[in-house]
Every structure is written in structure tokens, then in C-alpha cells.
Image (tube, rainbow, N blue to C red):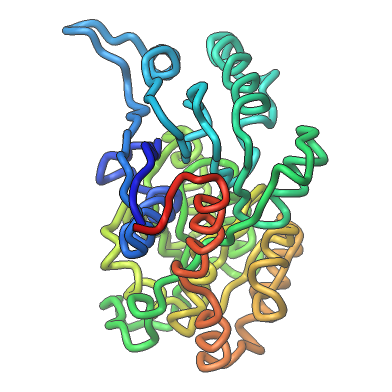
Length: 348
């Protein structure tokens, strides 16, 4: 295959701030290259916009990027805030940016009006992470179903394996519970802390992996953990190559997000043979089937699900077999098909 002027727009993450979106984007782009697709990539930073010694701010940077990033030829945007006029495809992980806009800062509301207009008007096709995101695009934002396709995220089962070396932890009776995700309220970490407190904080060691997006929120749940006597170990961002060791160390991954478009850590945990407790969301039901333990995202239901998962876990082999059904090649296939249909790539 060869290029017909294709540009992919992606979000730039500093190494210590990489999230699931960063891994998803990198995995897809790698599959495109393996399939022989040639494209140009524009990475958009979302850090503070500076002009010399002046700090202009995050929203000003978004406004600048929206005004200046206008590549020629077909565009596939994987970064919702920047959708140039020639955008044909946009990847949608969830519709979180469209929720609770009225409570956001005034400058964000101003910038967001343009983002919403571009998002609803410019793309020809929306590639949703899950059917749940597809339904939100249609039901909440009014986008026609015939403009939406679905490409679920994969998992690298050659990398996430049950034979990964576990972490070295103190040799005591505490049960290691793992959370992987950004440190901000939508991830429900405060609910996990309260749930372990209800079950007996002394029984557990909570391992937390992920960058602290909201320092005030992180300080709040850390203070609460200390208050109730829960041992909480914050690792912050860890390199991807270290993640299998965390999954292998944990008795459970607990993923109590309030909203998710897909959720990658539970499937990574399953690939390593580790059970997962997840919030009962449509995207999670779709992704993890009958092999996760579901709970309404509150401390009462979450506590019950954790106890059930500890008492009656699925076997590592069963979890591993389920994870093997997913791959990044499968995730990339709908994109490659769409590229062909739209004339964005062609056989050499």
C-alpha cells in the first residue's frame, strides 16, 4: 500500500504522562506501518503554551493548534480538539470532553464551542472504541449511525504474559490490590480506598500506577487511606515494560471508573492471568464479557465484588484464553478497510 496524502494527528504525551490513549495510538500506528501504509504524523502537545518567558496556558495552546494545524490532503485525527477542515476520520475513545462542559472554566467553554462544531461537522466517519461509545455518539451527540464504525482496542498478549516476573513486596499477609490509571476523579480511586476500608484496611496493600493528573484529588484519597490505615503505594507513571510485573503481583486489578469508553488495563490484567473487578458500565460489559467481576461504582457494591473475586476467582488459563481473542492487528483492520474504501490508501 502507499500514501495518498494521509496525515494522522495524535496527542503528544511527555514520557512520564503517557496513558492508555498513548499506548492505543502507538499500537495502531505500528499496525498501520506493518500493513505498509505510509502517512505523516503530527503530534499535538497539550502542555502549557509558552512564548519566551510568558506562560500562556493550556487552553491557549489548544486554540493555537486549532488555528494553525491545517495539513493538506486527507486527515485522520486521533485528537478530538484538533479536527482540521480536511479531516475524513476521527477516532473517539469516549465522549468525556462533551460531559459537564457547563461546569468547566469559562475559557474552556469558549474554546470548546469551536471544538464541538468541528467534531460534529467535519469528519465523514467516526471510529468508536466500542459499541457503547458508538451509542453515545448517536444517542447523546446525535451523530447518524451510518457515519460511525467500531474498532475495539487490542492487547499485546506476547508482552502481557502470565510468566512475567512479579514485584518484590514485603513478605506479609496483606493482599496486593492494583489500580492502573490516571490520578483523577473519573477513575474512582477514592471509591476503591473506601471499599478496602470497609473490608478491613489492614488486610490490603493498594498499589497505584498512573500519573497524578489532579494533585488535589490524589492528595485527598491518599489522606483518606492514611486515616483508615490502608497501606497505599503510589508508583506514579511506570514504563510500559514494567506493567506485566504489576499485574502478576496483584491478586486483583480493581478498575472502578465512573465513565469509560473501553478500558485497557483489565484486558492487560487478564492476559497476565489476573482477575479484574470493574465498574458496571456498558463498555466494560462489552469488553470483558462474563470474565470480570462487576460492581456499581460505589463503595458498598465495590466491596462486595472484591470479596467475591477474592473468594471465587477465575483461573489464570481461562482469563488468558479470553485475552487471546483480542489483538492490535484486529483493532487496526477496520481502519485499513475504511482507508481503502475512502481512497486514502491503495495497492502499490
